[in-house]
Length: 542
View (spheres, rainbow, N blue to C red):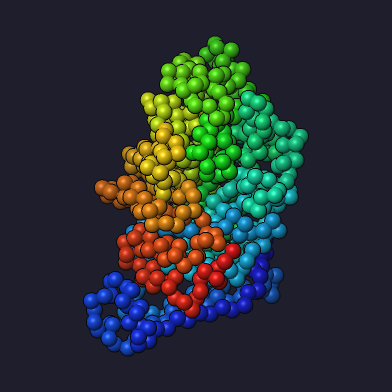
């Protein structure tokens, strides 16, 4: 498939410091303070970059991995090599590619990529949306916008982590971030509503296809697993020149928000569920999930257990201690409760394993890592039953580790574990919700990752750019890495937006990047946010 990158004006920037200006620069660079020869001698520091236009070739047009250049003219012995610390990536805006497959705000993207590269950021995280790439017809893929972003990242010296986003984004057509599932998939859901998850009230959730029909040919002759595999295979073939060089990680979406979980609570609520204390709803009432539940109940001779989810779960806003199922001595810990929760969590684990197996086969022999994400469901972590984790599919309670089977499964297929909540602190959350414990949840998951020896990707839950949040990320990353012979930790900051490049935020972020890298990264030491000639905040406004 021939894909042409849009013609972009050549953009060059050069920053020089001489005399007094040079002295001010070095005084801001801690590692250079104390070396008087550097501060008193007139010097010139030049950083130049070139981003050339990408134009279709005479043969029909394509994006070459080597198109354009990004070079540094470094004088006086500086080195641009990356340090051995923990690399930081920045997640791109959700709408970086339009519904027509074009890159939005191209010139702004160019300047943004240059800025984060100079700040010492390792690369970007790019969500590749199923609902955009395979939008109109099955097996018809449009990778154009994503190809242009990867080519731009390569020219800027940035790595790319790609997220295979098989889920819906946003709340509806009025949401600026709205990206539904492919149109042809929604048409199939209209014909068969049971392709969508359903709760006990019959409420359908179209964020992600029900995992009850994983291996059934319900999508015009293909199963959902086959459809995801075909998508990944076409991605591999299309982006082959970049794999292992620019594209270094493929994160495979496995549920709502790309996380291995059920849509027990709409994804847009997960950023503020600690305020509402929502228990979530079991998503087991579509005909495919019910058929599986019924078959499992019949196998053990308990037919009555196969008719639906637990009773006595209360409503979303209930205190769990006031419900029959979730209270401390509730039916979650009875033979029936154990049967249902084991089946419900096993179905989720089986879904994850099917996708892991396909991804491992598709990307085998290619120098890219695969990863998968677990949700940070923390707002009932301080209770006995952990109800919001149970409804999400994590059979994790005060007496059972629900994350160990998931981490072991990821480890079996060579996956990296991705998790959120790294910036959150119990002291803040408990002021609003006494039974919430993001730190408790994360410590349990990190200890499990250490035991299994699995690499880790951290993320923030909310786009906070204050020093307190960044210090918490450092603290939790050290909790995972300390004492490990070969720790493998990286951090994905979620996400680049209009606030990201504001002066104070940018200074704090670049300081954080230096701390994560161990302070040895030259790009980060430039404190690029202070270079007035770039005017990052204005140039990169969204």
